[in-house]
Image (cartoon, rainbow over all chains, first blue to last red; front, side):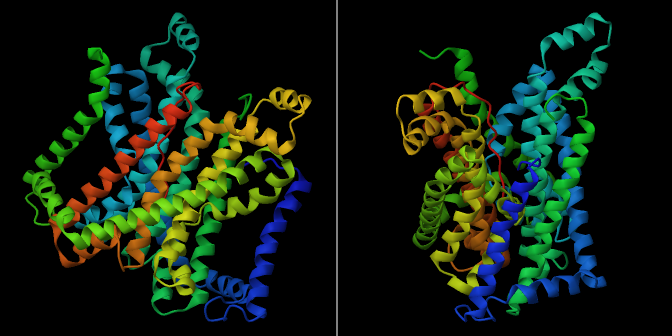
Length: 255
Length: 261
């Protein structure tokens, strides 16, 4: 949420995480929760480290990451293009706006069975689901960013003799960048979540599948491992996007 | 009287719906695929599902779980978010924990929660609660953070206690932002409801959808998709009405009907 916390509040922030782990440990040691249902944190994290170095588990991560990035990339390309086109052209806007109003609140997971039937059980259906879910926040924030670009900037560029299509790349796109990146950030979190769910529902590989296999065989330890992994992946990707953001937005007053 | 332009704007989503269904119809006719019925076939299957008593009870049970999960989450998250927004210490305490939890798919907790609480209503409602809480906390936090200090100082100078200031000044000022979070949460509640029922295949709308998929009843699959989609659109539109009435005073601000899972 806020990336610039002072060091004291960072230490304070670690407290609740430590507290959760402590309560977790206490629940197990006190015998309130049987270890079959709630394995002690030490064992879970040990298992995580042990799994992370195995080739099979790494392949599952790669499968998940591939789908995540493919879907997210499609959503970014499509969302930014349509968002800017809708903001720049009233005719496109008149078509896109009602469609987005209808499709955005639609629960995309419900479309997954249809995607399965149409695209099969492979990468295609999962990538499409991720793209469909990540698309709308990116599209909407791009549209918002591009339609609030100061008109004076565009007039100045026109007065300076910039051709129309260049205005798009030289004025509108950079000015809308903060908003686009906010949308991308939301889209990225959604991609993480959706790819995992899609893999849980039907898959033969990926982190979601690891969780379901563990759940079917009642291996509580193995159920926590993919969950922690996806959370870590989300944090790492979020951090990378944050770094990209501060690189792209250098020179912006409030990046 | 409604002007023609306003009428066109109101009717636009309806036209969009019709247009999308038409695209579906054409695509289905063109592909001629057994597993892809035409839009008309799917719509004709809708009354069959809604007419079936068991299916209807299942869908209503889903909606009840969703309403409870959403309600409890909103009641819990708004105060927490507001406190986080007004107190740096509380924000610093909870922020990292929430950041760690954020990218975890809440519905993915379902198998673990099922181990503890069984496959009943409690587990599903808890998952919905978890899914809705985060965006509502986040938006309440952002809203409370942006409240003008001067208003709070004035309130303090007029002798309002800290708790009174929170209820009388911070809550109304942050309301537009909070409602944006609630709207996100509403869509999210629907998604979490469906996914939790897909995973704990016992009852509910998600169960009907995926059972039909397993049994190859493709008309039912697509009809359920239409029903769930219609639920999403109707809930969103209703909420938008309520929101417009509650925060009439605020700028008709742009907000995103986001969907998380």
